[in-house]
Image 1 (cartoon, one colour):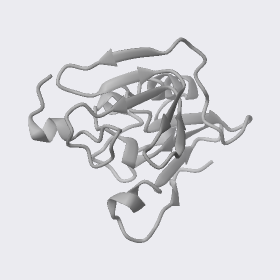
Image 2 (cartoon, rainbow, N blue to C red; image 1 turned 135 degrees about the horizontal axis):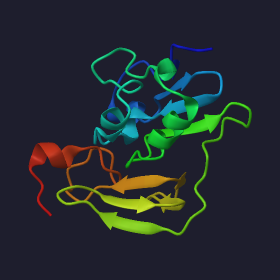
Image 3 (cartoon, helix red, strand yellow; image 1 turned 180 degrees about the horizontal axis):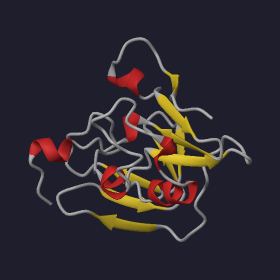
Image 4 (cartoon, rainbow, N blue to C red; image 1 turned 90 degrees about the vertical axis):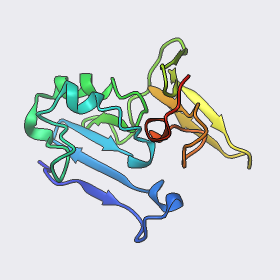
Length: 158
């Protein structure tokens, strides 16, 4: 049973290197994967399951705080896709969503796309996303085209 996260990161925290950080938390049954560069800090995780997700603590994820099924249910609610999971008996691949694609505009916030999405950047690189992807609408994100929560700081209304 792992209680400490597994760190995969570069030494300096520049915006480009922040994209490489991935933290994993496991209780033996499920592993929660957190990619901080994708997080929009909506607070849905800790408001929904504060026994596991508490941004005031380090590490901020206490995977032993709830049953596996409750953890999975909460991770699925992450609006940015920064949190994902895989069952340890399966593989290290996050669970893919097999559902109709839905697009939702959050008031004064990002555009949320639910389902499997392929995003092609200006250089032609394709990134595959699943579950929920939050796209910036305010123009202030340091992680475009994805939302990084800048709309909360820059007063975006829309």
